[in-house]
Image 1 (cartoon, rainbow, N blue to C red):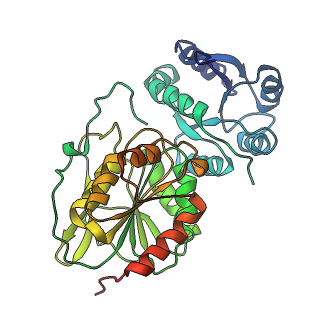
Image 2 (cartoon, helix red, strand yellow):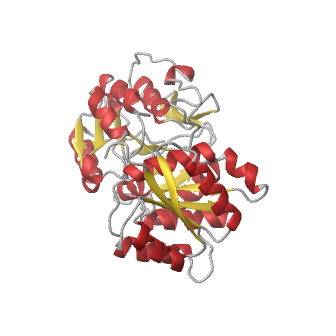
Length: 362
């Protein structure tokens, strides 16, 4: 059934949102809106009768909160869910809870001028529904499709560096499903782990909340990266949603650099940009990790890291929500090893212990 359409059920208490979502979905040749429910209790019955492939789910609804419904759904009948919520600091907390409960991804809901706002988000909504339809979901315990696809050359050239430092770094890239995957890796690192740079595809309104959430869960310190700050052991720096994150050197120190250059592989921040900068500046002193995500961002950059002497790890297919970015990196020959998500932190620490993880300290 290669040509079978993706069957989508929309759950939202706003009649206008339901109508707009239905229109956006039905105008795509490869998907159809099979129903629209005003609350989770109606949705529950429609799921039984319509058997949709993907659910879009609001958070604040009558009769049952969206998160309560999501928790029950992922426990009793796991299926791909895309959250549709308003972009607020409070809402971002809710979004991370939803991702932790098993939602595949999220889309921001405009607060004003709903009709025009939803049209502006149409490409993102459709992309995320398509991605969700391919995602693997388990029982619970952003880019425009029409934008030019640029490579990391648009931000920085690939150069052969001379690496005099012995200070180690960990460089991580992820996309769809990455918030939980990054949490799994970072929460298992000790407080004296080498400095970590992370690029996760995420809107800018969410990256600080993501970093703050991780900071509360981890032994290491986690923060949203700022421009031109020294990278310290025991710290992780999350790329802000508005800028590429790059690694640079200043004397004996590794430093952060933020760039608002054009999107690379339709993303800003881009994993390819971060990985290339690590290949250029750190070489064998960097360890690269590519986690779950749709597309190929990071694959070329990981190959460049490996060619520069870095040890590189790709998450395995069985533990990925979407085996896109890791698969592309493996196919290019960029991955030194393929490791299940639950083993990546231990594998990283073991490798660093064998090869030395000396830090430059003041």
